[in-house]
Amino acid sequence: MKKIAILASANMMPSALTQRDDSHERDEQMKKLLPAFLSQNMHLDIISWKLAANQAKHYDAMLPLFVWDYFEGNDIKFIKEMERVDKITNLYNSIDVIKWNSKKSYLQELEKRGAPVIETIYVDFVSQTNIAKAFEALSTDRLVIKPLIGAGAWRQALYKKGDKLPSRKLLPPGPAMIQSFLSSVRDEGEYSLLFFGGRYSHALIKKPKTGDYRIQSLYGGTEETYHPNQTEIDVAQKILNTLPFEPLYARVDLLRGNDGQLRLIELEMIEPYLYLAHSPGQKENNLGAQKLAFELKKKLIQKH
Image (cartoon, rainbow, N blue to C red; front, side, top):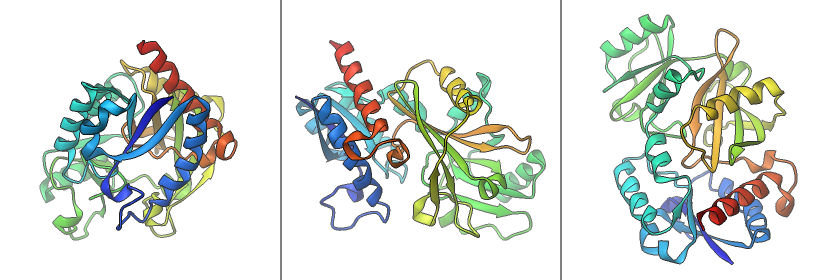
């Protein structure tokens, strides 16, 4: 039987005394992954990413699906740890994908390849001058300011023209990206389409709670199953097709732009939550989990 390790941050370890408020998402996901992987003759463990290189020789593959803290000042250490893992066992997604996807400047590259990306301005640091320029360049009165290395709305701010700049503690600590606030996130929601082995699996819509704009469950966001039409699936598939590699797993997050077209807000290929509850089937019959397990087993067979 193959042994597979799901890498996790300290506060996402099942044994942790202090856990993230959204750690229930880990439990829900594992209930579906465990039987699906077992059906493909693969055993799953959850281990700390900080111990990954030390434990790598005991595993046939490692997936950093619950590393939900690498962006909190741990990015350099995390990348180095994954580089060490990559020299010992199979890492999915690959170290090249992880490095490329860890900085959201990848959106620039995707845009050059023809992907429909939300218009974004990149700055080395957040300042009143940079923000003023962004208001003018984007022709908007509301901005979303995000760290270049970040996830889960960490150190992210919604800023309205004329307001006082948020505290430094609430803003990106370094390089940042600035985007227009799109009202569609409140009116319609953010679409997430999941792909395993380059093939579409399932989708959902994430919506913020009333008065907020953040769609994560940590901030009261909710989600519902969504059945995209072929045109919507094609938008996400074409974005993936621009990549020079095929990730084992990917989550394509889309928002409707002011032009009415779906546009890429993020492409998650390091530690995306997979929202398996929105894939058909429950527990051991969850199709999304089965697809991921099948695609991983196929890659491991190809390695040999």
